[in-house]
Length: 272
Image (cartoon, rainbow, N blue to C red; front, top):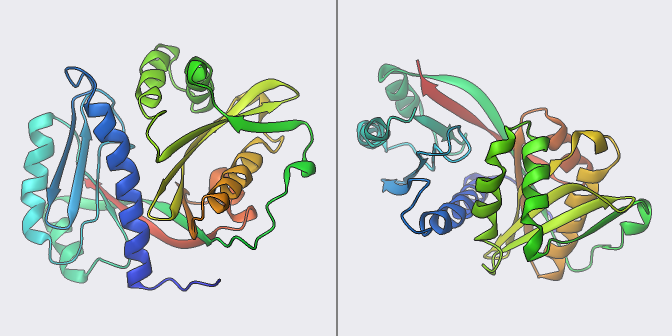
Protein backbone atom coordinates (compact mmCIF):
# COMPACT_ATOMS: atom_id res chain seq x y z
CA UNK A 1 0.00 0.00 0.00
CA UNK A 2 1.32 3.44 -0.93
CA UNK A 3 0.19 6.79 0.40
CA UNK A 4 0.77 10.32 -0.77
CA UNK A 5 0.86 13.20 1.68
CA UNK A 6 -1.98 15.58 0.84
CA UNK A 7 -3.96 17.88 3.13
CA UNK A 8 -6.45 15.18 4.05
CA UNK A 9 -3.76 12.68 4.99
CA UNK A 10 -1.81 15.33 6.91
CA UNK A 11 -4.95 16.10 8.91
CA UNK A 12 -5.33 12.41 9.75
CA UNK A 13 -1.78 12.39 11.11
CA UNK A 14 -2.35 15.51 13.16
CA UNK A 15 -5.65 14.27 14.61
CA UNK A 16 -3.93 11.05 15.67
CA UNK A 17 -1.19 13.05 17.37
CA UNK A 18 -3.82 15.09 19.22
CA UNK A 19 -5.66 11.90 20.22
CA UNK A 20 -2.47 10.43 21.67
CA UNK A 21 -1.68 13.42 23.86
CA UNK A 22 -5.35 13.89 24.84
CA UNK A 23 -5.58 10.28 26.02
CA UNK A 24 -2.42 10.54 28.11
CA UNK A 25 -3.28 13.86 29.74
CA UNK A 26 -6.95 13.01 30.32
CA UNK A 27 -5.91 10.00 32.40
CA UNK A 28 -3.28 12.07 34.18
CA UNK A 29 -5.91 14.65 35.06
CA UNK A 30 -8.09 11.96 36.67
CA UNK A 31 -5.57 11.42 39.47
CA UNK A 32 -7.15 12.55 42.75
CA UNK A 33 -6.88 16.32 43.08
CA UNK A 34 -5.31 16.66 39.61
CA UNK A 35 -1.86 17.21 41.19
CA UNK A 36 -0.19 17.90 37.84
CA UNK A 37 -2.77 20.65 37.09
CA UNK A 38 -3.80 19.22 33.71
CA UNK A 39 -6.11 21.27 31.50
CA UNK A 40 -7.19 20.66 27.91
CA UNK A 41 -9.33 23.14 26.01
CA UNK A 42 -10.50 23.53 22.41
CA UNK A 43 -10.24 26.88 20.61
CA UNK A 44 -11.72 26.61 17.15
CA UNK A 45 -9.74 23.86 15.41
CA UNK A 46 -6.91 24.07 17.95
CA UNK A 47 -6.44 22.03 21.10
CA UNK A 48 -4.49 23.69 23.92
CA UNK A 49 -2.75 21.36 26.36
CA UNK A 50 -1.36 22.52 29.69
CA UNK A 51 0.25 20.65 32.58
CA UNK A 52 1.26 23.31 35.07
CA UNK A 53 3.41 21.05 37.25
CA UNK A 54 5.35 19.42 34.41
CA UNK A 55 7.32 22.23 32.78
CA UNK A 56 8.53 21.98 29.22
CA UNK A 57 7.00 21.79 25.77
CA UNK A 58 5.98 18.12 25.59
CA UNK A 59 2.69 18.65 27.43
CA UNK A 60 2.34 22.45 27.20
CA UNK A 61 1.58 23.10 23.57
CA UNK A 62 -1.11 23.96 21.02
CA UNK A 63 -1.89 21.51 18.22
CA UNK A 64 -4.34 21.73 15.34
CA UNK A 65 -4.35 25.50 14.78
CA UNK A 66 -5.51 26.21 11.22
CA UNK A 67 -6.02 29.05 8.81
CA UNK A 68 -9.18 30.84 9.91
CA UNK A 69 -8.36 30.44 13.61
CA UNK A 70 -6.85 33.91 13.91
CA UNK A 71 -9.64 35.06 16.24
CA UNK A 72 -8.79 32.23 18.63
CA UNK A 73 -5.17 33.24 19.17
CA UNK A 74 -5.94 35.95 21.74
CA UNK A 75 -8.10 33.49 23.72
CA UNK A 76 -5.31 30.90 23.62
CA UNK A 77 -2.79 33.46 24.89
CA UNK A 78 -5.11 34.30 27.80
CA UNK A 79 -5.55 30.57 28.57
CA UNK A 80 -1.81 30.12 29.07
CA UNK A 81 -1.25 33.50 30.69
CA UNK A 82 -3.67 32.58 33.48
CA UNK A 83 -1.57 29.48 34.12
CA UNK A 84 1.77 31.32 33.79
CA UNK A 85 2.87 28.93 31.04
CA UNK A 86 4.62 30.05 27.82
CA UNK A 87 2.54 29.69 24.65
CA UNK A 88 3.82 27.28 22.01
CA UNK A 89 2.11 26.60 18.68
CA UNK A 90 2.80 23.52 16.52
CA UNK A 91 1.82 24.33 12.94
CA UNK A 92 1.61 21.82 10.11
CA UNK A 93 2.36 23.07 6.57
CA UNK A 94 -0.98 21.66 5.37
CA UNK A 95 -3.12 24.03 7.41
CA UNK A 96 -1.32 27.36 7.63
CA UNK A 97 -1.79 30.44 5.47
CA UNK A 98 -0.03 33.76 4.97
CA UNK A 99 -2.86 35.39 6.95
CA UNK A 100 -2.42 33.05 9.93
CA UNK A 101 1.36 33.39 9.98
CA UNK A 102 1.18 37.17 9.62
CA UNK A 103 -1.30 37.38 12.49
CA UNK A 104 0.94 35.28 14.73
CA UNK A 105 3.89 37.52 13.91
CA UNK A 106 1.90 40.68 14.56
CA UNK A 107 0.72 39.22 17.87
CA UNK A 108 4.32 38.80 19.03
CA UNK A 109 5.28 35.26 17.97
CA UNK A 110 8.10 33.97 15.78
CA UNK A 111 9.13 30.74 14.09
CA UNK A 112 11.56 29.13 16.54
CA UNK A 113 12.09 25.48 15.55
CA UNK A 114 11.02 22.48 13.44
CA UNK A 115 9.70 19.06 14.48
CA UNK A 116 9.31 16.06 12.19
CA UNK A 117 6.24 13.87 11.72
CA UNK A 118 6.91 10.49 10.09
CA UNK A 119 4.66 7.70 8.85
CA UNK A 120 4.55 4.31 7.18
CA UNK A 121 1.62 2.35 5.75
CA UNK A 122 1.22 -1.13 7.24
CA UNK A 123 0.00 -4.37 5.74
CA UNK A 124 -0.69 -7.80 7.22
CA UNK A 125 1.30 -9.24 4.33
CA UNK A 126 4.52 -7.60 5.50
CA UNK A 127 7.35 -9.67 6.91
CA UNK A 128 7.28 -9.39 10.71
CA UNK A 129 9.96 -11.81 11.91
CA UNK A 130 12.95 -9.60 12.60
CA UNK A 131 14.16 -10.57 16.08
CA UNK A 132 16.82 -12.91 14.69
CA UNK A 133 18.73 -9.86 13.44
CA UNK A 134 19.95 -9.05 16.95
CA UNK A 135 19.96 -12.00 19.28
CA UNK A 136 21.38 -10.02 22.21
CA UNK A 137 18.25 -7.82 22.35
CA UNK A 138 14.93 -9.00 23.74
CA UNK A 139 11.82 -6.82 23.57
CA UNK A 140 8.75 -7.73 25.63
CA UNK A 141 5.74 -6.10 27.26
CA UNK A 142 6.51 -4.19 30.43
CA UNK A 143 4.99 -5.72 33.56
CA UNK A 144 2.82 -3.67 35.89
CA UNK A 145 5.41 -3.84 38.68
CA UNK A 146 8.21 -2.56 36.42
CA UNK A 147 7.36 1.13 36.15
CA UNK A 148 10.21 1.99 38.49
CA UNK A 149 12.55 0.48 35.87
CA UNK A 150 10.61 2.32 33.14
CA UNK A 151 11.05 5.64 34.95
CA UNK A 152 14.74 5.02 35.61
CA UNK A 153 15.41 4.41 31.92
CA UNK A 154 13.21 7.37 30.92
CA UNK A 155 14.92 9.88 33.24
CA UNK A 156 18.44 8.72 32.45
CA UNK A 157 17.69 8.45 28.74
CA UNK A 158 16.48 12.05 28.60
CA UNK A 159 19.03 13.28 31.17
CA UNK A 160 16.32 14.37 33.58
CA UNK A 161 16.75 14.83 37.36
CA UNK A 162 16.36 11.59 39.32
CA UNK A 163 13.71 13.09 41.62
CA UNK A 164 11.26 13.05 38.69
CA UNK A 165 11.24 9.24 38.60
CA UNK A 166 8.30 8.84 40.98
CA UNK A 167 6.08 11.19 38.99
CA UNK A 168 7.05 9.63 35.64
CA UNK A 169 6.32 6.15 36.98
CA UNK A 170 2.92 7.23 38.29
CA UNK A 171 1.94 9.21 35.18
CA UNK A 172 2.64 6.22 32.94
CA UNK A 173 1.36 3.47 35.20
CA UNK A 174 -2.14 4.98 35.08
CA UNK A 175 -2.18 4.15 31.34
CA UNK A 176 -1.23 0.49 31.79
CA UNK A 177 -4.78 -0.89 31.75
CA UNK A 178 -6.06 1.52 29.09
CA UNK A 179 -6.56 -0.63 25.99
CA UNK A 180 -5.00 1.94 23.63
CA UNK A 181 -1.64 1.89 25.42
CA UNK A 182 1.11 -0.75 25.53
CA UNK A 183 4.51 -0.42 27.19
CA UNK A 184 7.63 -2.34 26.16
CA UNK A 185 10.97 -3.09 27.81
CA UNK A 186 14.11 -3.88 25.79
CA UNK A 187 16.91 -5.84 27.43
CA UNK A 188 20.45 -6.20 26.16
CA UNK A 189 22.11 -9.42 27.31
CA UNK A 190 19.37 -9.67 29.97
CA UNK A 191 19.99 -6.15 31.31
CA UNK A 192 17.15 -3.55 31.07
CA UNK A 193 18.32 -1.11 28.42
CA UNK A 194 15.42 0.75 26.79
CA UNK A 195 11.70 1.43 26.83
CA UNK A 196 9.12 2.11 24.14
CA UNK A 197 5.42 2.99 24.18
CA UNK A 198 2.72 2.29 21.59
CA UNK A 199 -0.67 4.03 21.32
CA UNK A 200 -3.33 2.65 18.98
CA UNK A 201 -6.60 4.27 17.95
CA UNK A 202 -8.65 4.09 14.73
CA UNK A 203 -6.17 1.61 13.20
CA UNK A 204 -3.34 4.12 13.60
CA UNK A 205 -0.37 3.14 15.76
CA UNK A 206 1.75 5.88 17.30
CA UNK A 207 5.33 5.49 18.49
CA UNK A 208 4.44 7.43 21.61
CA UNK A 209 7.71 7.52 23.57
CA UNK A 210 11.08 5.80 23.73
CA UNK A 211 14.36 6.07 25.64
CA UNK A 212 17.62 4.16 26.00
CA UNK A 213 20.07 4.14 28.90
CA UNK A 214 23.21 6.04 27.81
CA UNK A 215 25.41 3.01 28.50
CA UNK A 216 23.44 0.95 25.96
CA UNK A 217 23.34 3.42 23.09
CA UNK A 218 24.58 2.49 19.60
CA UNK A 219 23.66 -1.15 20.14
CA UNK A 220 20.42 -1.17 18.16
CA UNK A 221 18.06 -0.87 21.14
CA UNK A 222 15.81 1.81 19.65
CA UNK A 223 15.74 0.16 16.25
CA UNK A 224 14.61 -3.08 17.89
CA UNK A 225 11.90 -1.24 19.85
CA UNK A 226 10.63 0.51 16.72
CA UNK A 227 10.52 -2.72 14.72
CA UNK A 228 8.83 -4.59 17.56
CA UNK A 229 6.13 -1.94 17.85
CA UNK A 230 5.61 -1.96 14.08
CA UNK A 231 5.21 -5.72 14.32
CA UNK A 232 2.66 -5.39 17.11
CA UNK A 233 0.75 -2.74 15.16
CA UNK A 234 0.50 -5.08 12.18
CA UNK A 235 -0.74 -7.91 14.41
CA UNK A 236 -3.46 -5.55 15.69
CA UNK A 237 -4.55 -4.76 12.11
CA UNK A 238 -3.34 -1.17 12.05
CA UNK A 239 -2.97 0.32 8.58
CA UNK A 240 -0.64 3.16 9.55
CA UNK A 241 2.15 3.89 12.00
CA UNK A 242 3.36 7.37 12.86
CA UNK A 243 6.05 8.98 14.98
CA UNK A 244 7.47 12.35 15.86
CA UNK A 245 11.07 13.41 16.42
CA UNK A 246 13.32 16.43 16.47
CA UNK A 247 14.35 17.19 12.91
CA UNK A 248 17.53 15.37 11.87
CA UNK A 249 17.82 13.61 15.23
CA UNK A 250 18.96 10.04 15.93
CA UNK A 251 15.31 9.20 16.67
CA UNK A 252 14.22 10.45 13.26
CA UNK A 253 17.02 8.51 11.58
CA UNK A 254 16.08 5.31 13.43
CA UNK A 255 12.47 5.64 12.28
CA UNK A 256 13.56 6.21 8.70
CA UNK A 257 15.80 3.13 8.82
CA UNK A 258 12.77 1.15 10.03
CA UNK A 259 10.82 2.22 6.94
CA UNK A 260 9.01 5.39 8.05
CA UNK A 261 9.02 8.39 5.72
CA UNK A 262 8.85 12.09 6.53
CA UNK A 263 5.32 13.42 6.11
CA UNK A 264 6.17 17.02 7.01
CA UNK A 265 8.05 19.16 9.47
CA UNK A 266 5.94 21.16 11.89
CA UNK A 267 6.84 24.79 12.48
CA UNK A 268 7.18 25.68 16.16
CA UNK A 269 6.14 29.23 17.02
CA UNK A 270 6.79 30.85 20.40
CA UNK A 271 6.55 34.32 21.91
CA UNK A 272 9.32 36.79 21.14
